[in-house]
Each structure stands twice: as structure tokens, then as C-alpha cells.
Length: 212
Image 1 (cartoon, rainbow, N blue to C red):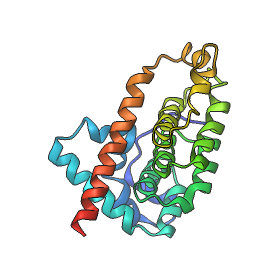
Image 2: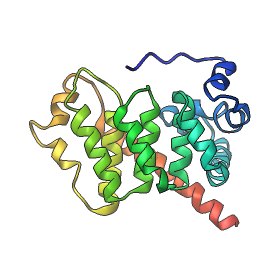
Image 3: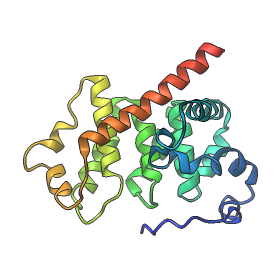
């Protein structure tokens, strides 16, 4: 079951990670709140955001698989951070683990990162993971998890691949209509916002490639 997020002191992070304070210090503590809801877009000046994304790209390319595995085994803060790092570097070897955690949907907020990672992978396989999630969780209007993020991510893949997965949910009487009737949301804005976050990241990745 999901619980309400509680901002925990540092020692709780370390306890959950069984002695990985270095990974927490380097990858999570200064970063998770800016990745949450894509806050880095609105809470930073342009130069601050550029530095933040430059460091994110660098860490995405250097973090080890062991460190990513440990982060994904912890609470939502390390998980959302790990998922963004996986997505930035397009480490598709983690697709199966992302799918498992995403469909389980056991922790608040981490799903935002899984949606970003799947959109960055951007294949039919990733679209089908998002479809599996939406088929299940849009049928539950009593649950507000990461449905907007998932539909925005699926739309992002549709745009890149010229597919039409999203249309099945948006037709009159479809699952999105019934879910959104009980969960107020601005889907056009969310699709635009998600695409903007992905665009920020892609520009940072391109800039890092140019510097090499």
C-alpha cells in the first residue's frame, strides 16, 4: 500500500540502503526534490538548471549498475532519482526492473521517474509497459497515482514513433474520461510539460556529447 510521503532525515535514507551513504550523498540528497514533479524546470534559473542537468547527465553515465540496483531497492527518493538516471543514459537493460516496480506501484512519486525512463527508451516495448499500467490504473478512479505521467509519456512515444496508443484512452467513454471525471487534471498542459522536461534533458545530453 502507498503511504503519505514523509520527508525523512538523512540517517533513514542510509538505513534503507544498508550502508550506502556515499551513493545517497552523491546521487540523491541534493537532487530528488528537484526531480520530483520535474521541479527543476520551475525552481531554478536557466544557468542553475543547466548546471543541474549537466551534473545529472554526468552521473547518469558514471553510476554503476550495483549502485542503481541499491537505489531501486530503497524508498521513493532513491527510486525516483535512479529512474531519472537510467532514463537520461537510456540504460535499457533496466527495462524489466522498471516495469516490475512501475506496475507494482508500491511507493508514491517513484512512478514519475519510471515514466520518464520509459519515454526516454521510447520503443514499442516501452509503450506496451505504459499501456499495461494505464489499462490497470485508469480503471481505478479511486486511485490517483501516476496516471497523468503515464499518459503523457505514452503520448511522447506516440509522437516520436507516429503510433496511436494514446487514442484508445481518449475516445469518448474511454478510460481517461471516467478516471479524470473523479481526478481533476489538465492533460494538455501535462503532455506539454512532460515533453518540455524531456527536451531539457535531451539538450543537456547533446551538450555533453559535444563537450567530449
